[in-house]
Image (cartoon, rainbow, N blue to C red; front, top):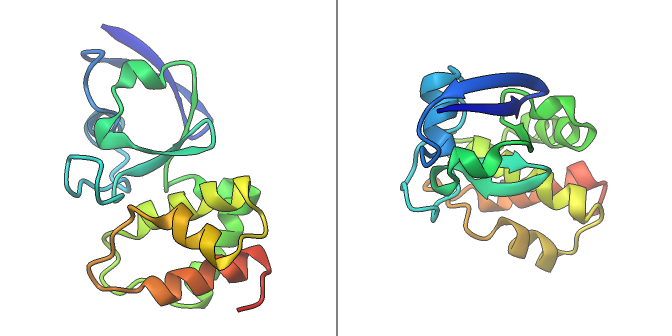
Length: 153
C-alpha cells in the first residue's frame, strides 16, 4: 500500500503495510538510521520522533497514523529553532556518553521546550520521563535543557 508521508520537510511515498511501525519505515525504507530501536515497546524513548511537533515513540506508531502529519527526525531537528538550541546545548555541554539514547532525548527535549519554553525542574522531569539513559547522563541532559531554554540552573 502506498502511503504518503512528510519526513524532515520532504514529501515521501512508502510502499508498506499501514501497520508497519514508523521506526522501521524511517530506518529501512527511508534510510534515516538516526532514530534508534531500543525496547520495541515504547518504554525507553530511544525511537522518539516529532509528529506534528509532539514527541511520539516511533516503534509504536503505525505509519498510517503518521500520514498527513509532519514527521521530524534527529537528522533534521536542528532545522527547527528550538531543536537547534537543544542540539547546540547538547554539544556545548558534552551530554552524550555512549550516545545511543541521545537522539530520542534530543527529540523529547525539543518537544518539551516547544510546548514549555521556560520549563521548571518539574516540567523537565515530567517532559523527559520515559526517556531512559543507561549511562545515567540525566544531570547533563537536564542542564542542557535549561541552557537551551535560557533558564538558570
